[in-house]
Length: 242
Image (cartoon, rainbow, N blue to C red; front, side, top):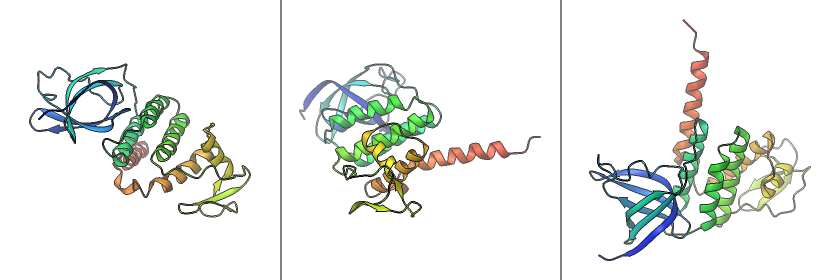
């Protein structure tokens, strides 16, 4: 069966799974072709030439034969150094990948999402607050690109408080109302200005609500893995010493 050859397309690896005896099934994010599935033949054999090149959080140049739903990888090379994510930052990176796998259909290109993903990975290497802000901004931008954007263009008062209703937008409410979000937090998210601790908390709650219809929290593995890791670390701290 013939197909179209694509050469040296920029891409990020989102996931890789064993496929048959020595091959792998890759899911990658590209600017021109969107999310695509590729069969990488011989990737797991002892003589695999590209072993170690296809890694998470490393910019890649990919070549493949496009034959419909799944293409066949013909070449891959690193387009730059990998972004080193350690500790909780690694879970953050996995979370971004999981979101994209949940929300992006194959062969639906969104060049801005490809760009925003690279920016988010770079920002994850900052301090804890910068990493958390990177997640919130990426979530906001992802929803916008997919047509589910938050109505942050509504008139908002920095001194006010609002409740978010998916079908109606933001409604003014009294401070202390259950689910109340500070207007200053919403404006900071809209303008992508620095988010303080209160704004980060507000934005996390808001974006969790906005994402729930499209990527239910219960269906995402990474947040639970991070909670389990934190619980394990906390339990070790309180263990009595011999």
